[in-house]
Length: 354
Image (tube, rainbow, N blue to C red):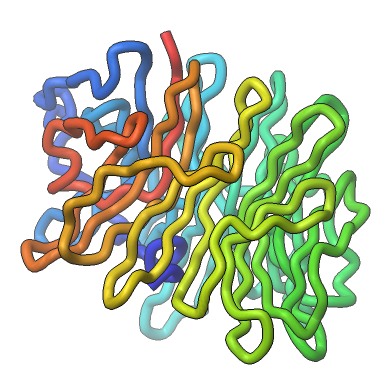
């Protein structure tokens, strides 16, 4: 289920009949102190239309002909909206092609790589005038998956290819570039973070772990991930601080991690866990569980997190007998998405305060 939420939503390449449709949407403010930007898709005639949204107003992403798209992350900086994802062509009689992409204000550009059989963009970070994207690719010669950082569209940093590596997140502090992810090695899956390409190991091969999010606060490096090993230590939502692990949740049922954010020294983290027969969302502040309004009888997931001016915003989704709905909590309470919740499956979001 987590994989479906995180990476497997696929969008068909098509456009609306005229751009006037977007002009007809009345933009409604979701919070009164800033604009909230989402990436997601709406359904029309059983095909997904990929867009980014400012509050509830859609802005289409430019697409290649005959392509499908998996958008993955969004950030807003200096009035510009950056979206990253993966584009696929999978047509009868043609080679399967995947490309890692960056959109700036909806305009498409390819992230440059050597010859590959697969590419994936997973996270974007803007520092000053520079746009950094983390992801991975598989070389055309059949080698192992390589973790990659693109800077302004060009390859900036890669792993050595000795192990199969996936970068899940990126954070830039000054001249230092940090990534977090995992490596598939003989005997298991281990989590790591990298500072300017130099790896720091967070786990051992006998315990399956996935690092999903990284943030740096001064000299402190925080990584959020999850442990998934029923045969030994069980499952947990784990926050590493400078390599030392703290279990925010632990148990035997399914536990998954979302994102870690720091504001004014406070450390926020989100994820979800299985309780009985359903999944429930979780938000933590300084390792203390915070309330999230959840009256849903079905599954509810927390998948992304932003903090601004002391406001904690959590993006999630709800599944019930009536179908699936997007949901946004602000300080633990659900807010009105003005139709977006029913019409759009959201994946990630960002905030631009006024």
